[in-house]
Image 1 (cartoon, rainbow, N blue to C red):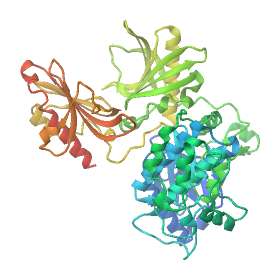
Image 2 (image 1 turned 90 degrees about the vertical axis):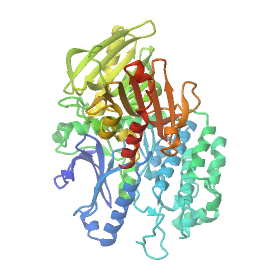
Image 3 (image 1 turned 90 degrees about the horizontal axis):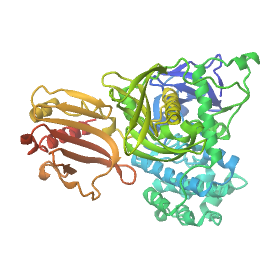
Image 4 (image 1 turned 45 degrees about the vertical axis):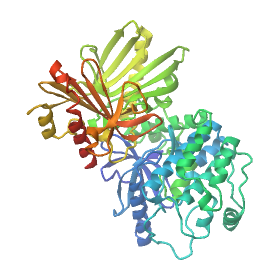
Length: 624
């Protein structure tokens, strides 16, 4: 990256611009920071191109298409102004190389990388097609390799399935010849199967290092796409069959994205990028954080050289910017050590942001890599993730992170230390089962909400590790908090204390019972006869045959086909789970209503308040 020039804008809407990522014929891409602290890549179109009505119309369509796609494995668009003097679009900043750059620099991907790439691209297609779109320009420079999987970007020539807005001359072909489908090369009407063909071509490139249809000229490339069979002999056998099916010339014979995703189950290699890609991602993120710390100022080292900064653009960025797409990251060299990312910073996260924090990403190698080698992570709740960590001294331990949860005053004491403007609390816990050392950053006093790290073991070394891990997590949250990508109608987005209508609380627990937040995903109401908590979280499903749960229809089916799972204990406590949607494997987005009776009489009918309270939450969710 390089500093902003004298003619570069300092703001794009509500986003403060910090540095120049790159520029090309269509415009430039700038690093920005939104008011909530997230980093954004702002694509800003050159003024002279914006004066062209056709170009502005095409950019407006790109904005509309990008905003329709909000699912996983796409770079979410946060804001845009296609009508500005210099039209711009701000998407989530994605540190990491493009697929094109990764293959050019490191060669063919190992099987674990191919597994992650295939699953991510299939998932991205499912979200794009669910939004009613065909991407129409899937190619290696439009796929960025983020830490947890690929991100599909640049919907500049995407087209809605229900409409066919023609902005090109009759008979013209729009797209990237080496990765377009045969029907696109011949100018025919496109379906979602066209994108599947493009994914197949990219998988061949990733597996072999070579494009399957690239010829000496554009006409030759288009001829190869339409008439020649791709050479897949070097694609790993476990992936070869589905790749060949993706590249079938007949769209009807290609797999659907869900079928492509299902095929990944046959790959036994652990999903993950090669070390070189992971190092690039970590380097890119560090570079971005350095520019955030500078806050738009020119580095002193650059001033000493007369304002010149040596910078090298990754191949992905040069191609993307030239094509008008979103950006990856430019790499700086020869600079001084980046400043402390927590210097003069204050950790500010709203409850809305905390509800969206991806806790397991905060335990990833790019956050905790300096402390050891992270092992597999285990998501327990939306707020909670655990991970095995092999420290640099060879010691194996478990690190558990809680984000946006209650920090018990009885367990945590003020240490007298502050980090990023937040008081740090200390805790040690001993039992016959486990010893833990904890450190927490307090974000709220009432309720006591914070960020907590527990490390297995209560010795001095474990406490030092807990503090180091907490600082690393805070640094990431203060600069670019990793957020989960959720549909608009997601229970996890909701404030649990406002998710239940007060009239329902009054009729179920008594008039005047008020909501009391427990953490960002859980709320409690204390009535005369029972306490009720509502938790809106992503967690393990309970409708898969666990013996203590009974699966049934809500209110005997009188309220419609709403399935719930329910359990009661010997004290009469009633817990009701309703799965809003399935997520990964055996997990789902849940609404959990717990009724804890305060007397024997109340325990006889403890489940009674659950049904109207659950229905109130679901009605509020449907209205969002």
